[in-house]
Length: 248
Length: 282
Image (cartoon, rainbow over all chains, first blue to last red):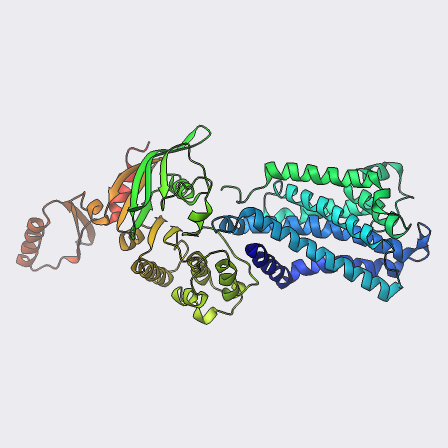
């Protein structure tokens, strides 16, 4: 336990100290929210556009932080030899990974709070009525994305290409899932593709809770799909996660 | 009591036999050099001892532990300096040491370690501002912060300029005077000769020579004599340097000539190494 707190503290320092990661992971969704609410007016899903965009950014933030951010961080550390070096210390590997995951969740939590504050400030968006449901939905979504983030590291061979690979997944996924605006006018084919992604289901759950006053448990499909993706991610990660760069 | 015991160690990668049954021992407080060309099995050996790789056969004991599965009790007592590795560019030297110190039950004082590796002036500098040599000293500091009894140094001075190498050698000597046991792999023969109490030369997964550097260089008793004669370089290998040198100099003195560029050289470990690793290559 002492080692966990020690590592969590250092993870936070390392994250906030590295400006690029902090800007890309933490600030980017806040920046997008500001831009999108500046151009979209009117109503989405029968609510003011800013409400739906806030919901969309919460989902995008989960994918960006827990999937993209986590994967890039782990690939970078693997390729730098940091993971290998950590393995030679008495710090147990599970403790290390849990500290990295909790640190990522902490960043996402702060980001979500910042989004609500920003929404309140810019567009007077309301606080969620079912806060617990929303927290659980975001936690489930972030956990699923973290599982997938762990899984994809095994498929990224080098540091150079990692950012491209990860963004090639996250940005189209966010677009097709409706993070940047409603998908109902998209062609059926694109919407069908969107339905495959976990982000679409996370957004369904967030929208239902935040915009329509439902609870998380009113969205069993979303829960099942997210849990399924998370489980697949963990199963794949168990087989493909590497602590060392590839030889030669 | 030996720090490391290796008996008949085997390891294959697919059909390739990386280690074909090697045995050696390290006494406590000894500096042992593992030499050999690329692909000879040095890194495989070290990584098995560090607990990174599983062996296929043979017995291995490191500080009384089987390193397979990398038991935590062992990790408390070893320090590992990896060949290619970096640390967080945005942390300072002091912060990096403190992060690693927190992993150990009985770490050394961080300030003391930073002094030992000569980074006092850079203590509060970000790692991205360090030179290549300073980064390698940081690597060593991070490996020492847990106060290990046994230190693995994989190619510790690769890429160093001559001054940085001398400084690193001094540091390794000072570790030895602290009573640390050191397993060193290196390409540089002069390095092994300078630092190691004993060396083993690996080739194609077998130890082909083992002994003190003096024993190994003593194997060939030829001495090399070089000088220039009428502008051409002459190199003579002899087992009777005294008599030959006497003949040469007597003749030269009688003829009133100078033996230009005269050198008499005992074989270095490098000569012996080249001789034995070249062996019967196709």
